[in-house]
Image (tube, rainbow, N blue to C red; front, side, top):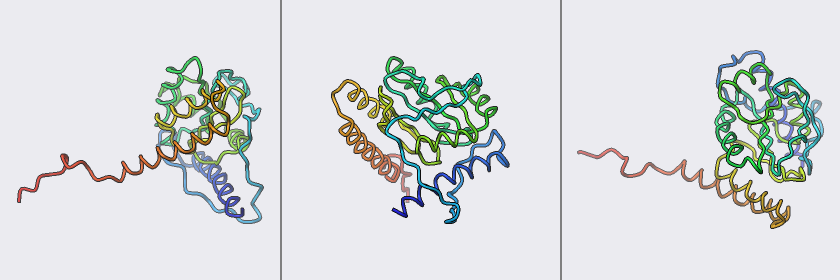
Length: 232
């Protein structure tokens, strides 16, 4: 139990460290990964966050600066994607998130929750062409992370069903095969073809399979056809 508490605390503190390091030293055009986790002394420790069963009612400013509830998005499936402009895998996800919202327009909404500086987010969103709603928070963005009960490391994608129940929290970069499988299973859940336990079980097992396959592909030697010929 103590180990789990320490892991959760280190992750949250890492987010604060990354955010304020970015604020003090990182230019807005730099592509940097989140810094390594920072240890926490016992006096600084607080109770670990817990992922709630449902999406919390939390408000952040939208692109126009208007406070907007995360519960205001009404499509049957909502992906809440926590990201920052300085996070390289977060940037890599954006084309996929645009594609998911475009191809599944009737059933899926994507909400980008940027834990970053407003000016940097708006500038980058315009440059890269983010086509889904954005909510933006600086310190209050970190509070949103805590309300969702997710680790303070980016990216994080939270998938919710039509009742705003949290079905899956995907830590790290979201891939197309993962997104498609998760969305299909939540569709089955919304249609009554699966219960919550069944949906979570199937998704967890499949994501583990996807991760193992990616790890194997990454470690596999190059194809023999691409090897240089030994000409003696």
